[in-house]
Amino acid sequence: MISRCSVSSKIAKDTLNYLCFGYTPRSTIELQYELEKLWEGSKEMTDLSSGLVLSGIFSLVVFIPLAIFLLYTEKRLRNYQTGQCRIVAKRVLKERALTSSGPSYETTRPDFDFIVQTADDQQYQAQGYDTLKVFTQWHSRNQAIVDSYKVGETYPCWYNPKNPTQAVLIKKPYWTLRIMVGGFFINGWILLLWGSLLAWH
Image (cartoon, rainbow, N blue to C red; front, side, top):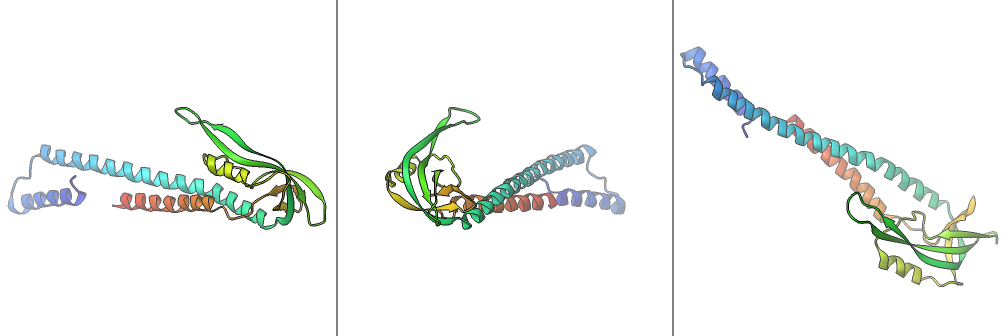
């Protein structure tokens, strides 16, 4: 690919030779050919830089709602109080996930029915496992979680003091979601800066 500097220097040299020494510049056809090659290369570079910038913007746009959801979820969990939950029923929920092309695939998540015993000795019926309630393809892991709880047994849990029917059996940072959110943020800025640098050069 011919750079802008090389073409510009060749044009300047031909013009200088013509003006100072009477040399005839190279043919217009040859010069036009070089300029067309330069234009094609510039267009390819522009398309690449535009694609990188748009990809970076998309990553940052996805990052914003994920970050808000993560902050809201973890802030809400910090306000949950510790209680005791007696398991009434347990199961692995299954759901078919659709794809844009090709067959669907099965996803699962652990789910429990339990009675929440609050700090003031009140009881409430609740259902779930964690706050996210996300279906995944970790079938063995989800089955192992369900197997680790016994019906009729009581386990520590956490509930919303304003609405004790909202309760979870686990309360821990969502590292997978944190990594995902951080990845979108870092990836977005890298693509945005990379595309901007290519556009400037």
